[in-house]
Image 1 (cartoon, helix red, strand yellow):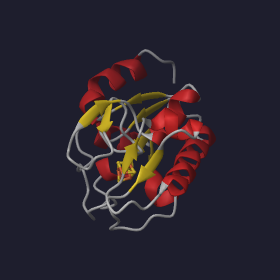
Image 2: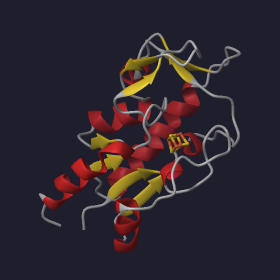
Image 3: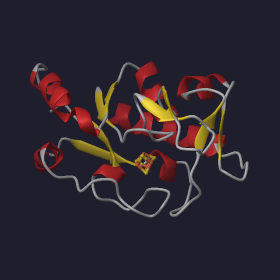
Amino acid sequence: MRKVLVSACLMGEAVRYDGRAAGDGGGLLADWQREGRLVVVCPELRGGLPVPRPPAEIRDGVGDDVLGGTARIVTPDGGDVTASFLQGASAALALAQEHGVKIAILKQRSPSCGSREIYDGSFQGRRIAGEGVTAALLRRHGILVFDETQLAEAASWLQSQPD
Ligand code: SF4
């Protein structure tokens, strides 16, 4: 069976920086959970960060730049959490590879999980095109990344694949 990596906060787990969840794991996610298709992960917790934790944004680039060492992930007071985010991204990739995952559904706009847009590092709520560090690492390793607004696209990709 084709497994799907999914952000834990979309499955009702209260693991976001603010101690809340980002979704209830209903609809297609619930169907996939019943089928035993989901591999659930929170990269930031895997990186050793606590709940709650300060918000974080990528400064001077996007996820790929963090992987390349030219951008950092910071908190509003200037704390550098890059190492924890990188550790979490590596752990998420290892888990995905362990389960033969080829597709992921990750929470949009997160500095870890965002896949199309992220915040610009100013903590002013400004968005830029780009992805978080986990999404970037998964893509580097050939894993398709969608967000929670693209479940239909993900379902159609899954249907096109032999299990
Ligand atoms: S790192 Fe990903 S899974 Fe964890 S809280 Fe942030 S968006 Fe959700």
